[in-house]
Length: 237
Image (cartoon, rainbow, N blue to C red; front, side, top):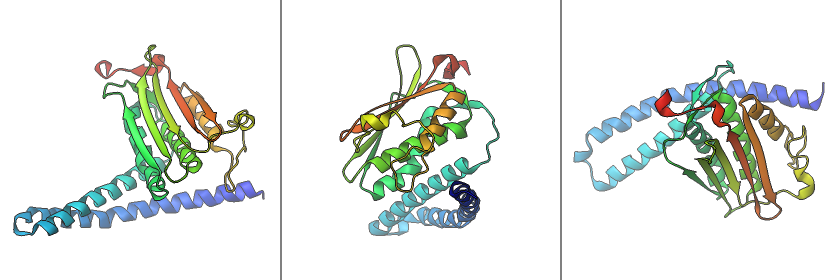
């Protein structure tokens, strides 16, 4: 049995265990939330220091719940179900998941969305999230302490929707740029080299175009373009 198949099987098992753990984590989180809500009901009887502690704890709890929910969303089986998806919302899911690792490495992440009127895209939301997570994870891996990552969502003059990730990381050499979307191409010690080739394939399934530009030592920008022929404005829903 090849090393790749063994590794794939390990990931499959790990994914099942993770999904189970996430479901189990939700129950004690609900108990903690109820306790925090109870304390908030009696905040008039508490000192300012205790109120501040409760508020900080509540915010941290909300953050954990959001991460658990987003990871559970990503772990759902692929049902090949297409529906109208908000790129902003799915981008937020990916942001919340990846920001944990970015913060640990002291990498700043920012969102720049051009308003709330970005059209919806009819697609498989899980596939879109997988693309976003792959690209953002690569951006984090390419950055060092003090670098930054910016996610942008906007429309161009042709009403296509653009999802863009720009980082100030190590960049990609001109030689390596030719092979970025090739199967099994990676510069990472523990990488599989499949992430971006999968992104390319999934983008095609979503009727989207994926491109990038990079400069060694200065950073990289990946762009995902959703054609206006496959988008729906909110007032048309």
